[in-house]
Image (cartoon, rainbow, N blue to C red; front, top):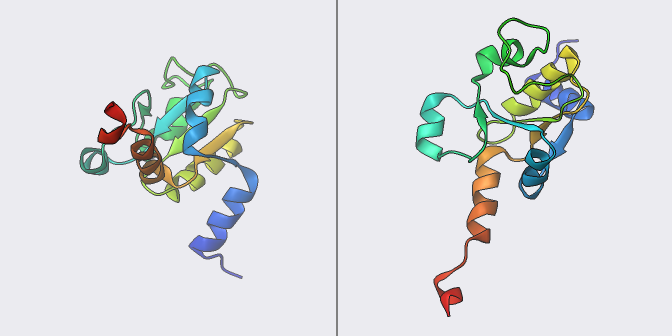
Length: 132
């Protein structure tokens, strides 16, 4: 039987945690990595998430491999919490599952991706009526 992309997505999500936008600050506070895997064009169009490291999808595993010569210095080990996000939370689920396959025991993705985080962040901004 041939798997569909939806099958792969369901299998990936069964193996990883999914973090909500409201949980991201706690991940960063505990030393976890927040990784933006969106292509440059999407980041320019949609915006940035402060504090996120930008590592495009095609080099993710090499940059996070704690034993690799191309790793980023922020990687401390396989037990470090890593939350990956894309635009809407589909590609990031597959990427987080790949990191789990690499050995990251706390690999996760951002449920709903950057778009969900941006919507959550907008709701948290004080409105003009709050200025007193």
